Image 1: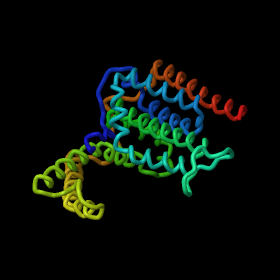
Image 2: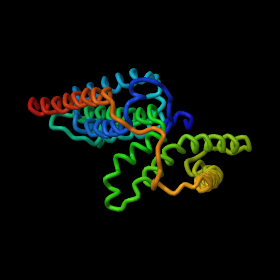
Image 3: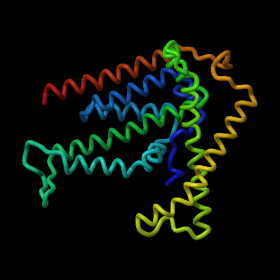
Image 4: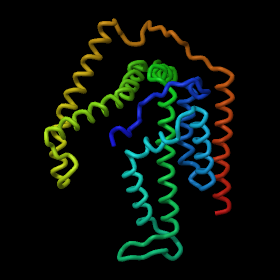
Amino acid sequence: MLRDITIGQHFPGNSLLHRMDPRVKLVLTVAYIVMLFVGSNPAGLAISIVFLTALYLTAKIPLKMVARSVKPILPIILFTAVLNLFFMTGTSEPLLAWWIFKIYREGVYYAIVMAVRIICLIAGTSLLTYTTSPIVLTDAIEQLLKPLARLHLPVHELAMMMTIALRFIPTLIEETDKIMNAQKARGAQLDSGKLSQRVRALIPVLIPLFISAFRRADELAMAMECRCYHGGEGRTRLKQLRLHASDIVLAAAAALVFAAIGMSNLFFERIG
């Protein structure tokens, strides 16, 4: 299960999406997340799925990566769907009634909508890290948050911390997997027994994991100090972020897709 977590991983490539300005990708990712909640109708979700599939094909990233990124949160998706299925009331007669549970047509609809929405949310945000390296992502976040520096906020430090945290997710996952395999080799029962027993069995995993995380943080801080790192003051960049014509074209195409999602929502509200 831990090997299936792909958050924070980067897949180098030379596709149009890889070469896209990271600032535009960040803005479009946020806009896509907003439109997922705005276009909560079948047509809007269908457009969102088609648009996301086209982006994955453009980036030449296998669609099976979507399944790998969704697999770890599958229990959350099922739990959310079940809540909407059994606790969403409707105006018509229930499709199924058993004891205190009643399933309405609206409950089935919202259960499917929420499941699809969460899957698209995870797949959309994962695509950002798949096609953007951590260093470039740091520069993009810093550039977008630059106006807040006038309020004396440590913009560079905030961007650096966010990117370091994102970058070390795969490392910590790999470390956790190694520790769990080592504990299993010593006879630890991590996958069997009651829930309370499984929780207690995780203590020998969490303690060395925290020690390893603190050790890595200390080594990283020492390495940055040895390289005379003093924040963003006076820092130069090898590659400057510049908008290209392809970025503007892709942003305009994405804006048209988002407009179509918004229009579909207005259309369904009128006919509803």
